[in-house]
Length: 516
Image (cartoon, rainbow, N blue to C red):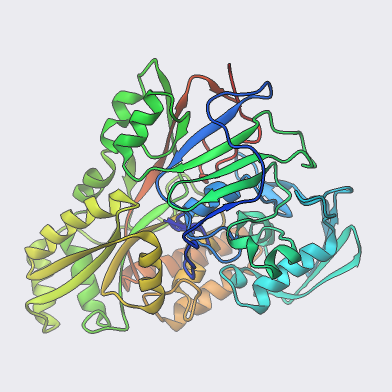
């Protein structure tokens, strides 16, 4: 899942983000000191065991787009600003900021006395380095800086960004998720950032054992209120049933990998807390427009007409999602109520016949690390069989999935984008010609123009109209075949307090504690 970059399932997301130019973990265990532990040890809130659905592809925040990575990195790194629970941007490393009257110059003032977890000071040069790294190397979030002309550090506590055009979503761009985290140059230069990232966040990586777990310990040099927990152990548990069993047996005290068919009954449990919340995520299917016959918009529309989104959503999420034919969910001010496709097998057949397509065989790439893609693919395959399309489901581990997507080695795939905040994050990198995550190779000059205009439009009403127009074209062209907006579903032990579910899926344990 991509997590808005990034994390599509950047998480997912995107995100998660779940976007994708990703490396793999190095396959070995890396220990950089610190204690692991399990259960609720110590007098500072204990060590939390958290089960996540898969392994991060790497821990370099600028290069990963996997949600599993950002679940960990949310607790390790800081950004200049960050979203609160209502997704409004608040101070983080920057204590304040001002904008010029023409909105082309932004000046950020940094907190005094901030250090990285290794004790090295963090100042404005680190911010400039981090952003220039993303821009110059054209990393996942480079598109977020498209209007940035220069980034300078006139002194150790000041960062000045000069823009080529007003950028209403600049704060979301520099703080919406940890894909734009401030990193340490020596950590990057050594290459250790992939498995031993050095951040300024509330926790630091103590060890990373590939295929098993990542252990965090409290960062006692953290500039904010010190975490109550001694640490957090992230274990990789692919099977939701096993994750639930581990939660019930207190082997873990938190998970976001619950069996979807059991969520409703679990919410009434006296043994654990299970909470759901509407998310800013979306899940979709994409067709490779660089391959025939998927370059034909009529074929893509036929497939969009052949599938039954209600059946797909029920199979994948068991009611923990809302069907939607656009990306942005109903709770957003930028929601666009547009649903042109109706499940109609006869019509889909006619459309394929008119396009001259018969007896088509296509692969559908999914990943077992996101089981809902497998469940949804089975329904999609059955529905497309009814219109003469044979679907070969190709199930890969997520690192291989990302690699295949990046190379364009697919007919179609299903995945999700997680944790989006600004409408630009729902559409630009995915559908602008040459966009960072436009792996389906979609190109529409009108959409490009609208997306370019909307990201610099300061009038909210005009911006909404531009995104509505772009969304309509994207849906009509079936650049993505949107399926649903899922709920955030998480469960945790009654021992855990100070934790809350967030609509952007940011997993923050800095205020959490475990009772003895």
